[in-house]
Image (tube, rainbow, N blue to C red; front, side, top):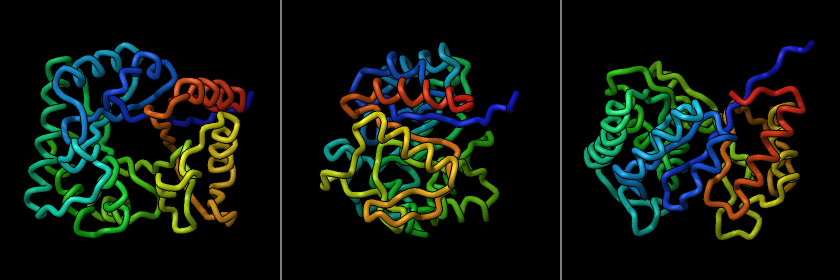
Length: 247
């Protein structure tokens, strides 16, 4: 019997949708909003408990402190102010984790912060310094070949390359803007084919049709997509049929 290959499925949670109980059975890791763009102590506590019940690895999902724009707009912050905000957000989640005897597995920036850190050395540096300041060893979920991934490796922070199961890519590996009708993949079959191509061939077909090298071992499905549960269940079931273990 062939050895099963391991794949991690993650989702951003605690963002006000309220579908976490339905998502968790199909996830192996999650990224919990911790107050920057969404989330509060109550939502963090309930999702940490859910994560523990389903043995889902727990990550912090900090962002620019901007609930008005859901963390999807760029903010002009000094490095010091950004560091303080991110540290406070992660600390809030760590307080909950400590109370529930749970462990922080990874950090995944959200929205505009995630996209900016992929190409901006200064922003990437702030995030890495925050991770290095944590008392325990925590991984970083980041895009392949990004500025922040390179900076993390240089500073001996373990990186897990992430790709998006339900988003289209440009040729430079940036995500197609949500202003574009083709930004999000809604058909479950299209999502599966997208993921299998990235896993098997380590390439992604960009929106222009050009194949671009891409490595990933964790794949994100956005929990706020209308049919997210249907997509995740289909993806999970079919990855298992293809001899992948969700872990």
